Amino acid sequence: METSKTILFVTGAFVTHHCWDEWRAYFESKGYKTLAPAWPFKDGDAPTLRSRQPNDVDLATLTLKEVIDSYANVAKSLPEKPVIIGHSLGGLMTQILVNRDLASKGVAIHPVPPLGVFPYEFSFLKGGWKSLGLFTSLKKTYMMSFKDWQYAFVNGQPLEEQQVAYEKLTVPESKTVARGGLSGAARVDWDKPHPPLLITSGSWDNIIPAHLNARNFKRYKKNGSVLEYKEFPGRNHNVLGQPGWQGDADYVLDWIQKH
Image 1 (cartoon, rainbow, N blue to C red):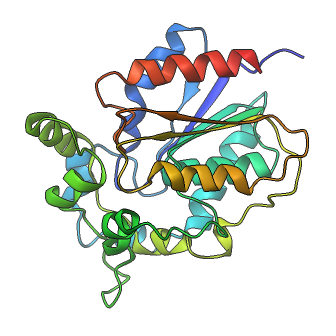
Image 2 (image 1 turned 90 degrees about the vertical axis):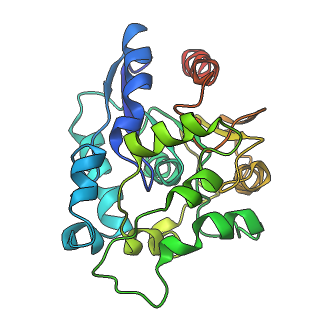
């Protein structure tokens, strides 16, 4: 069976789909066709999306199920089952889409864990709890502060790199989507056979620590499906744009071609 030459990139929370621009160029240079569709109501660059805040009610009331379904519909519309690669909340969505048999193979990069993997790590709670917007209006979006961005995404990088990444990528987020990660929308069937799946993590990641990704990996029933876990040293949550990201992309490409 021929390997799929189409890659569908799934974006996580807090950032625009332009976080994939360099990865798209990389994989297209290797002969792949790539797509990185925006979430509903997030199709714009960072300044445009930030200018709508806090009155972007359509985005504020978006649900995780609607975001997952938007990517599922893209996958179903393609002439071949794509390789699906997602980051963070997009990694969780990748696991769900793989579980739905919509991918030829999947790569979940530092994924938010599905329901059933309890994230007890303090750094996860510190990095992500504000996005739930407890005791605030769900009609208003949440915008991560630069200080929180420094902790959750770009820890360990020089200040100038942190600032450039924040201005280029960070956008308002739906609290209802964030809360969806704690609901049935975030469920996978751990026992079900699935297409090949790679889960990656980073040793510097605060918001999705490596051992949280390792527990996610271990929840899958060993049923003969191809399943692999890889931890990269010195990688924070800004793994898609952190200097040296090409090493991660090389590993992912090699894994895709091997399976």
